[in-house]
Image (tube, rainbow, N blue to C red):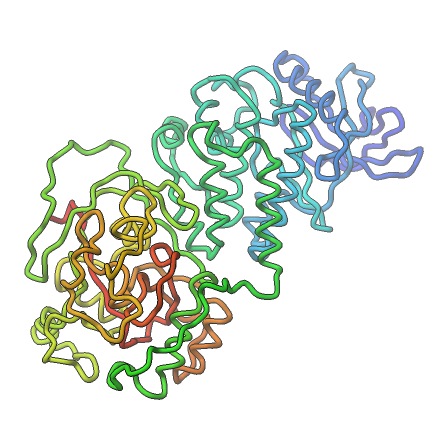
Length: 555
């Protein structure tokens, strides 16, 4: 390494890489400590902007002291007047490599990485430093699992310019809308980038894609973030809500700094580490006395009640399938009802609604949904025409009752025949509760008898018109559970319960799906509009039916 083999007391041992700066593994010859030495190259010294960033990074990082921030031990110039800084030497890998190599662990491990980053950012904000370049490459995970925030090269500098030396395409993915627009930069840009990084940490993928900076910036500025991959990962709703809040377009709608982010992550981790997580209001209810025997097989009845009534709070959530076109289609007046051979449908207009227990704002395109659950009469027509098997003990004497005892495969086959599909979970919920986050389809009051809940048997699909949703859909709560599309991961409790109910016993590796909206047999619940239960794909129950949706583009 010639004359560059030593800088002061630091003996350079191995070149590790770099661009405008070169990084070496080195040894402090006085105390024998292994360190990393970062030296600005001659080209970097000639670039005034690069040199300013290097000096700013050394000053800022050198004045910080936190277990999750890379430590700077020393700073100076070599004999060629090139600035250098001496940092702690990190073993392990950066977060980009950890994600790519599958080294981030399970959800709990990922959240522990996230909370360490949040603590680091909370600390540097107290030092009046805005990092502005949060991305996986700037986080290091040591072999001991300690997260280190690195690279303060553009912290607290002027607005990021497209022509800046060292600008990398990876950076735009994590930029907040106000950064893209060149507006005032506050600590809220780090909150936004943290939300994007949390999304990527959990799912393994960036939340937006684009093959040009312009396309990425358009998405950041104009398109709602789809939480579908986060829900599909099995992350609790609270995690999905945190991602949504951190990545809000408006800085004022994000958490105010990282103190609330740390508190929320710690709360989620404490809940995940608690011995049980079953909410008291979702305890299973015994079947009402006097129910006709044909409603449930005698052996399965109590177990099915346990399986579908207990696991509202413990089930993982699939994701909202937010489909937003980059170029909004020309506005057309859509009919509020749609007549189809398989039943009337009602329009759910495009736009935002409040989704889930935490009322996360989600945007969906317009779609039509069946006004009622699919009745026996229509399902029998399908089976006859398609030579599809009818459900066991099919009640031909009840043509207007909802078809039940079907699997999700049966429901999908019917939907395909009808030129429709099954709803996603956010579609089902928007159709059920409207846009204002109400507790029930008809509003926030339970009412006297607006739904077939806590009853003794199924009722015709057009009963309870007073319980209609804002769009006119009936029996979205009560009567029969309804399938929604989207594979989920079952909880341990669900697996244990269904192992008793089904032979051969289901496993976590086979597909499981959600059912929504309660059946007649469950009691009233303030969670009915946003809760769900989990069932294996091959399961059919005498309280589970379905309804379909149709895309506006397919009308």
